[in-house]
Image (cartoon, one colour):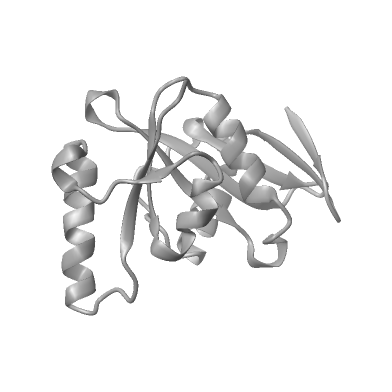
Length: 156
């Protein structure tokens, strides 16, 4: 359990079953991947009055490949360090390499946590290679407006 000081008192903790709907609602509201939202893998940032302010998880893919995923913060609490604190705690929870997918505009944000862009699909685990290829197709078809990146962080 961890407390974080900002304008509101925030507690970052492991999610519980009672957080499931709030996590799903937040993920859907920020339009990020709504698949594999297993509450047992989530950290949540909660306000003093029990509102979900942010969340994040580490997804496990085939072959034990780990993904930093579902990083989301409610709009009125953004730019206060909540996402960064959730990300730091998730990174600290594993000694394995982590992958993530993000919009290109978030590249420098994730670089600050030690993530590097992986632009070559054939050097990636299959899941991420497929996502990168799909992202390039969607960009060409103008279904998405900016490139999608796959980034990797090598843990110590």
